[in-house]
Image 1 (cartoon, one colour):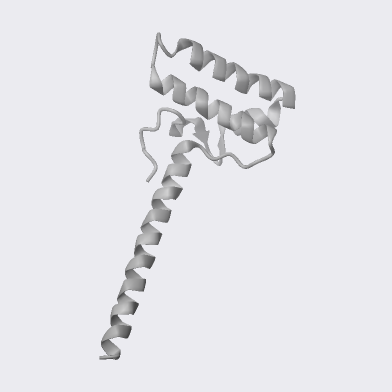
Image 2: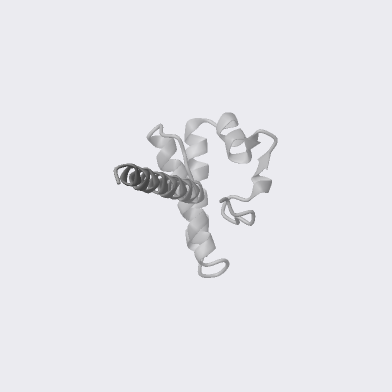
Length: 112
């Protein structure tokens, strides 16, 4: 489940249907946008000891992951989104395992 208090990519970064970063990507040239992403990585890495520690490193990682996805033409998924998808997958797999166990028990009771 997505954390409502996500300080790495807070809800106020999304206005309407678009996130602020998507507006920037649409308005800046490719090199300007890449420069913005790299600048954010540098900013958060260099200030982490003086300001927000691990949170700033997570922000730097978010921008670096975004840059890698952008440069490789891949859809971007943040670590929080990936963790949420993995948690949902775990729930589905547990449900499937329960269903399989129930079917095996039912098949066994029919053979008795």
